[in-house]
Image 1 (cartoon, rainbow, N blue to C red):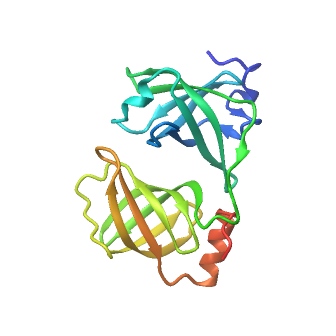
Image 2 (cartoon, rainbow, N blue to C red):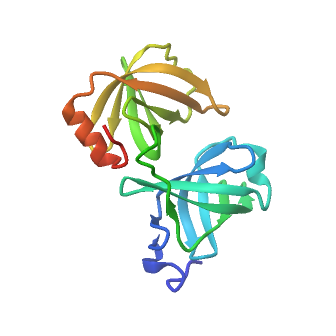
Amino acid sequence: MLDNRDVPDATSNHGLLIKFGMRMIVKSCRTNKSISCELIGMRCGKYLVLRMLEDNYPAEFHRKGELLTVRYVCAGCVFDFSSRVIKLVDSPDKLFFVESQETVESCNSRSSERIDCFVPVQLSSGETVFNATVVNVSTQGCLCVVDNFFDISLEKPALISIRFFNGISIDGEVRFTRRQFLHNHNIGIRFRNMDNDNKKNLKELIPALSF
C-alpha cells in the first residue's frame, strides 16, 4: 500500500521527475539488453514497481541484484539513474521491483550526433499502421522499437510515415529492420524531405537536437 508520506501526491516523485503511467526503458549494465516498462508504483528512495510491456524478457532481469540503468523522458529531456533488480513477479502480471534513487541526471548531450529518447509514435506504411517507440534520434533519422511486430514486413528502403503525439508527421525510409526479442524489432529510419517547420517542431519535442 502506497503512503502519501512516501510519495508526493501519491502519483509522482518530484526528485526523480517521474509519475505513474510513465514509460521507461530498463537496460542491463552487464549485457546491454533492454526491456520496456510502465511505472505503476513506488516508494520514494526505496523502490519502483514497473509493469513489463513485453511477454518475453532476457534471463538477467530475473536475477536479484542485477545492475541496471533506468531511462525515461521528461519535458523532452532524457534522464537516467542506476538501479538493481529487487524482485520479479510473474503472476498475475509481470511486475518488476527495482531500486530507486533520490535524484537523477540528464543524459542529453548537445554535441552527440544521436540523442537517446523515449517517444511514443505511430508508424504507417501503405495501409499498415502500428505503434512504436523512438529510442534515439538525430537530425538525419531515428531508431524505433516495435512491440508485437509479427507479420509486418518492411523491406528497405520502404517509405514510412512517423506520427508523433504532438501532431508532427515526418516522412522517412526504412534503412534496416532487426529482431531484438521474440516479437520486438528495431527499425532504423532515415528522414526524408525535412522542411523548416518539421525541424522546428521536432526540436521543440526533443530540445537537445541541433539542426
